[in-house]
Amino acid sequence: MNTPQEQSPFSASKPRRKTRTVMVGGVGIGGDNPVRVQTMTNTDTLDIEGSAAQIARCVEAGSELVRLTTQTPRHAKALEDIRKVLHNKYAISVPLIADIHFSPPAAFEALKWADKVRLNPGNLLDGKMFRDLDYSDESYKKEIARIEEGLMPFIDAAKKAGKPIRIGANHGSLSDRILGRYGDTPKGMVESAMEYLRIFHKHGYDEIIVAMKAADPLIMIEANRLLASMLSDEKMDYPIHLGVTEAGNAEDGRAKSTIGIGTILLEGIGDTVRVSLTEDPEKEIPVCYAILQATRRRITKTEFVSCPSCGRTLFNLEKVTNKIKERMGHLKGVRIAIMGCIVNGLGEMADADFGYVGGKPGMVSLYWKKELIKRDVAEADAIEELVELIKSKNMWVEK
Image 1 (tube, helix red, strand yellow):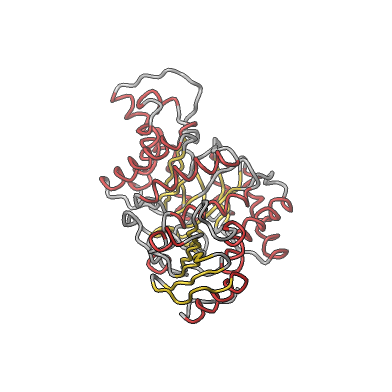
Image 2 (image 1 turned 30 degrees about the horizontal axis):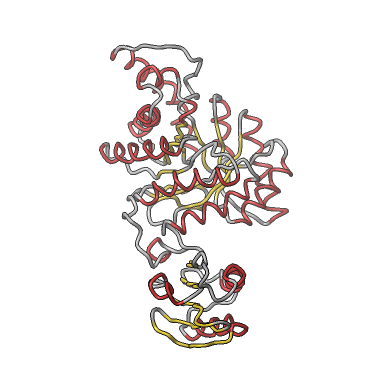
């Protein structure tokens, strides 16, 4: 497994926030581990074969953890059979995460079968009835004591099971209690989670990951900034899971996710990510990796730089770029620039390892760093010549 230092030859804008490592099954989150990629099934968890098949597709696409809906104890126990099918039919071992809302009995059952249990502090021991609640400081302290009392049996069970927990606050499911105290705000989201974190920490259980999610990427960004600040102030080093929930589909969903997740990653925050799309979950995975690559938090493929083309372009840039991507897209950490003409070529490809630049009609110049290696290579031969150049610098690997 690559460490973050090995993943990227480039500098991210801020150093990654230091956290403890939390093990979810055999996958480490936080610490020196790569930023992890995960998704969530949209099958009925009681459909064992269907859920296992979907998980297999997600793992094939690159998902390192998978979350499933476990709304009842029966759904939680179904993870046992899903895991068996994954092992026996697909030869897959992947951490399975139970997603709990409303039902403490389901949470207890999930500790038996899941590798991690997600709790929503907005609805586990509270509710959202859109009541207008007003608390004094004293009455609010009593509410916190009630929450602590309600969590204690689960904390004891989590210790015995040795299973990590995710405290995941959603902007859309803040409880009436939080709304009455803090309003419908990023501050309310963070306090919703911090109340649980303080209780878990007080009672000696710190195998925890925390998340702030919202459908609005700007709210998600502000909540995660505030969360990281408050965790630092209270000397808590829990890893943070990032996502823009209910982002939608197609271009809109990808744009919102990129803005929210990408911004926070660039600020050094985030240890695992999920892109939430109204599409088959396996389609979320390439978007996760693309965001990680663009933010230099995890390099998993070739980095391509290519110009948009203009009237000076000397070859079919889109066609050639696609051919080069198909031939060389597996070279993790290698940066290749594809430029249609010499005007912007040298400047725009300054940080690239290799350059493929239009020199004159039908002819291409090949570069190593900023050094011209071959001039006037026939376009028909240029891609294979580029492969040979990469091999000569010992940066080629076979697929």
